[in-house]
Amino acid sequence: MKRSIEFNSVGNARELGGIRIGDKTIKKGALIRTASLAGISSEEKTILEEKYQVAYVVDLRMSLEKNVSPDVALSGAENIFLPVMEGEDYDGFTEDVARELADPNRDRIGMMIKSKEMGMLDENLYSQFLLSDRGKNAYRKLFQLLLEMPEGRSILWHCTDGKDRTGVASMLILAALGADEETILEDYLLTNEYNAKRIAGAKAAIDSLDLDPELKRLAVFGSGAVYEEFMQNAIDALVKNYGSVENYLSDEMGLGEAERQILQEKFLEAGR
Image (cartoon, rainbow, N blue to C red):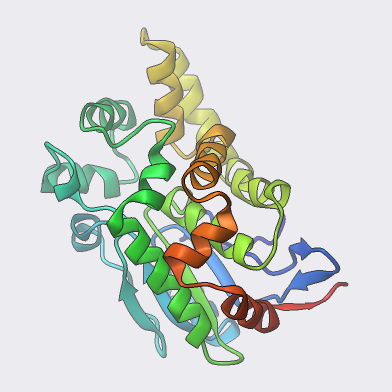
C-alpha cells in the first residue's frame, strides 16, 4: 500500500514521505502517522528507533485513553502529550468509557451510541477539533515541534486508531507544505485501504443488526473507516471561519509565510 510502514503491532502506520506537492516531493522517513504505540512489538519499536530515528512521539489522545493504554517509550525519543480533546469536554465521559475506547475488542456499536449521546461523534467532529481552544493548542504545539525537529530525525504523531485526530493533524501538515485539497483527501482516505479487512468484518456484523442506518454508518466509522465528508466539512469550516486553510494556519497555528517556507525547505525535496 502507498507509503506503508509494514507493522503488525501498530495499526494504520504510514508516512507522508513520497507525496507529490507541485514539482516537489515530501522527504521519506521524516513524517510518520500511526495508531497507538501501546502494543508495539520490540522488533517494530527498534525499527522506529534505528531506521526512522524518531525524535518526538506526539500523543494526541485524551488523558484517560493515555492512562489506560500508555505508549511504549522509544529510546532517544521524547514523548509529548498534546490532547486534542478531553473527556471533561463531554457530559458522561468516564474512565470506563476511556477504557472501552482503548480496547481493540470493544463493543463498537455500544460506543457509537454512547459517543453520539455525549456529542462526541457526528460529521462535524473534525471541525470541533480545529475550532476548539484545546484542539488549536495541540496542533499549534505540533507545528512548533516540526519547526524545531533536528535534521535527520523524524516525528511520529498518533491517536488511538490513527485516523481522526491524527488525520486532522496530517491535513494541516500537508496544507502547510502546500498540498492541494485532492492530495489531502487522498491521504486521509488511505485509512480505508489500511483498515480494509477490519472494516469489512465490522460492516458484515453491523449490517445484520436491526439498527438505524445512520447509526450503522457511524458504527462502521468507529470500527476503523473514514468518510470523506468528515474531512471536507473540516476544511469547509476553516474556509467559512477564516477565509482559507492558509489563514487558519497563520492566525491560529502561528504559521505565516516565513514559517511555512521553513517547513517546506525542511520536508520537501525536488520531485522524483
